[in-house]
Length: 168
Length: 145
Image (tube, rainbow over the protein chains, first blue to last red):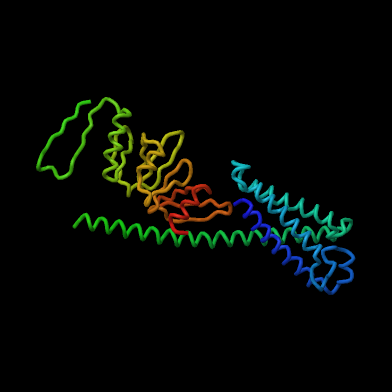
């Protein structure tokens, strides 16, 4: 079950990261030549994402999923507050994304503009993830409310039927 | 223990009166058995024992290793353990929300999913109770999700 969750979350994270890289790829296609020299992630800038970059993004997605499984586990960390879990998760993602960037040459580490871009991307990805999570819980809440209401109605009816039989 | 049985053809509903110095384990057991037959529980408040119908129970919670029964207006203490209450109460109307709490489903006013898989219940009384992730699974099945 845990393996299934990790793989599922890896797929979600991978899809999201591909989306972001594709958007950047399209947005920066005008400076394709320059981007190819600056970043391994944009080696095929304007023409797609290289297999190497796909593999690197998959590695990062998998690492993020492992971190998520650890920080949000109720068996490994039983009594940790949710806000602490989220904080640790964000720090882990930031550190792992930074490390992968340095290892895989996603951006030149000596350029402050590149770091600014990295921070901006991280903040945007975090904001999008949280918004998606909040939307999902709101949809879930509405579904719970609807199902509960139906359950309460059906239980009431059963109770009334039994009372009616007893009165008879 | 002395047992007196008085038969009277004019009595419409059987009545049990227990006269004792204190409520012992034996008496608690007799009470629990008698209540089971009638969809009722007993709760203690200000030293008096009250009969509570299942329909009136909003939730049952634990505090300082004592078990309390919450109705719309009052809070009663019970000598029964949580697992005994769980076994006695009808599973269609009640469910275990977490390690220390049993909730009356008909008295849930609102339900909200949390990002960590827990559920926040708002009861008819306005009290808020958490359904832990462990018990949320069974609850989901119960309401057909």
